[in-house]
Length: 131
Image (cartoon, rainbow, N blue to C red; front, side, top):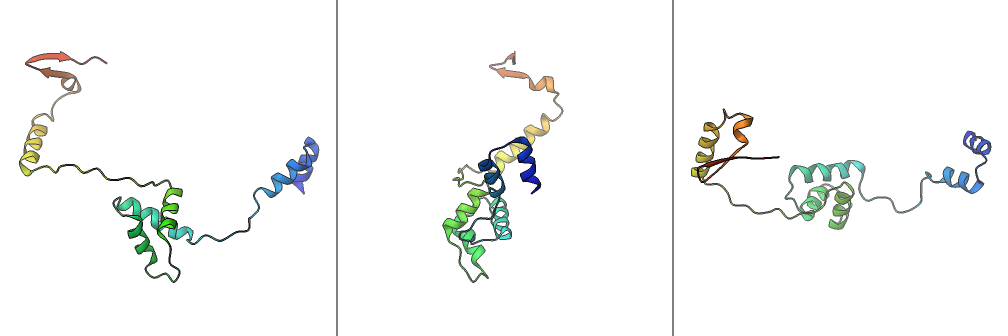
């Protein structure tokens, strides 16, 4: 009622008043197959292990459930949470010799100042990087 009086004082159209009152009303329709906690479970597990597929997440979620959830439902819930599917890029692994060389190089250069890092070296000639 208070809302109606505030609209009456501002002389707002009745259709606007009706729309505003009914816009946040609970709608009829099929209930979601997953609960908020299950949606959270899917999101957290997907973030913990980014290589899990929709089928693997579905299998984790369906253990101990009487009503089975489909893979497409899992993917929709992840998409609604802002997680989209990506293929992880394969990269070559470092051999232990390369790791050892990288560590030695880093240890030799750990005392460098910011000014030292601004210098580029090519062919024995030093050149300063300009911003």
